[in-house]
Image (cartoon, rainbow, N blue to C red; front, side):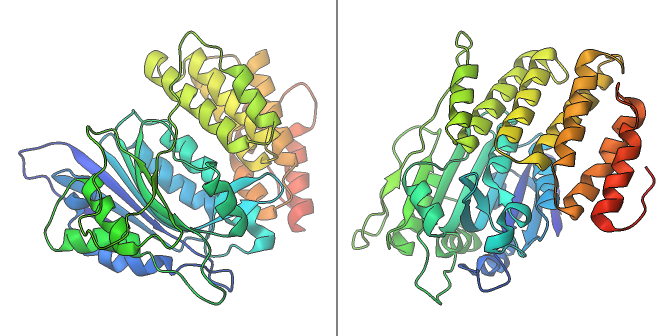
Length: 391
């Protein structure tokens, strides 16, 4: 659902709000995520974004991580302020030790293929200009994810305002409710427009600690106020550490060390941060921005995420062609070959089919030096699906 509030002519800035509520539609469900959407839908769009005009995009229990990523990218590309509201549950991929946001079809055995990797989200947010993005979270974490979150292995990146609650898993056979975010909606529906720091304090107080972790990263002046109701126990608030890129420092050793030690989300976020800096400094399509795009592609390979790696190598090859590099140049051929190699590592037919179209277009333009690469795409699709496909 998309709602657009028209500008009154006094202000031209239009904000974008993305409401993402997701949880498994099975016994793995830990939170009634979508129950907050009717309350948020009743809020004037301008309250969600803090702008006179606003566009609101709602994702209720989406099933496909690629679709969610596409919606996030569209919202990230919007020029005005972006407000992202996320409620759902976090899980930890035991193989890669990466956090994921569960979607409607997520089960413990399909986590890597049916949920949204958290570093996908933070990587996209890192591409926006600093201080133009606000994220409000109301999440529940399963046992393993909770240990990582509590240990500091969670955040949304640099230059993003963050207010939120992450709760430990509820008791067995119980389902949590997004009470923290419902408090925001209730205050807004009553016509009040306090600063987000005040909203956070009141929501944290009314939701109660119950062992939850309350996160605050606010670029505004002054400390975050205490909850306005003294009898309510004060919620514990912890700030996510902020790391700024230093132009005189070589970030590659730190990024590689993070990846090699299994901290793949941290490595991806750092690379995305440097890519964002390169985009602002040198522009899209610049060699500097392309370098970091390819670093992110290789980090996805190290994280054993071939789908993401294929997607990023494809984007790098397309960007090189768009800036006029020859189809037979070493860099273009290498990007296409790496995209193709990562695509071949995919075992999920649906994901392979989704990425096959863009890879086929690339292979038609850049056949490479090994004969039969284009035909190999069709043969592999046939093998995965049992259906003849001609590229």
